[in-house]
Amino acid sequence: MSVAKNLESLKTSISAYPCLLVAVSKTKPVEAVQEAYEAGARDFGENKVQEMADKYEQLPKDIKWHMIGHLQRNKVKYIVPFVYMIHSVDSARLLKEIEKQAKKEDRVVNCLLQVHIAEEESKFGLSEEELFEILHGEMLAKATHVCIKGLMGMATFTDDEVQVRKEFKALKQLFEKVKADTQLPSQVDLQELSMGMSGDYQIALEEGSSMIRIGTSIFGERNYH
Ligand SMILES: *Cc1c(COP(=O)(O)O)cnc(C)c1O
Image 1 (cartoon, rainbow, N blue to C red):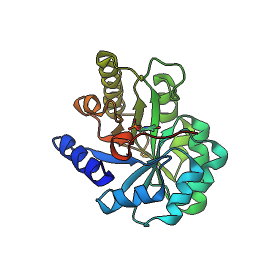
Image 2: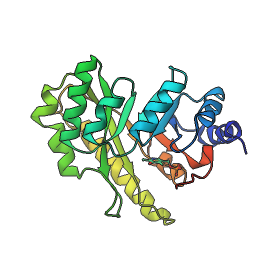
Image 3: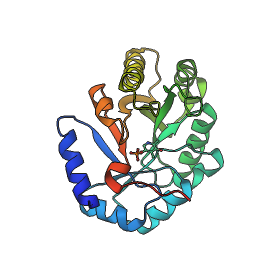
Image 4: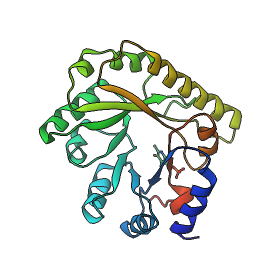
């Protein structure tokens, strides 16, 4: 199957839902991204700073680049000049660095706060308590170059649909709780709920996702060396 055909059938399968499809092109060559671009995709997700910066250089400038992987503070400066959204903000220190670099570039960077919803220990993300600490914290209240657009989460990697649904439901509930919070600063403009990957996007959409991040179902399996 070609990238274009995969994209087409994916779009058909999600057409009932008002969601943004982020094509996750990590590890894939620029040619594959170009093919998806020509088939209409404009939002691409990467998890490595260097790879995203290289692809940004080589590909059309109307692409919106989404950082979806764990981000180290010392690398923030390399993507802030062009990144469209950072889905993986998982600490106040990281957010502070994004603010600092965005200020230098004179731009406002869209951020999602990544929440830990999976059973697995290994996944990054904030607890509910840490999430509200950031949302109500002094640093965000003083920030002028970041906007918190929503939340992101990854479910446990399992075939157990009940488990996955439970985790997405919990994230959606937390999203609604944050939305209903009357003490939020103006730097929070909660609109997006980024959840769902190739293996679980259908459940995520049923549970209220507004952004799905799809790699394998568009570009095929990844080869890691
Ligand atoms: C790799 C990745 C995806 C896409 O995964 P697929 O299973 O290939 O669709 C989505 N989100 C994050 C955070 C990822 O790292």
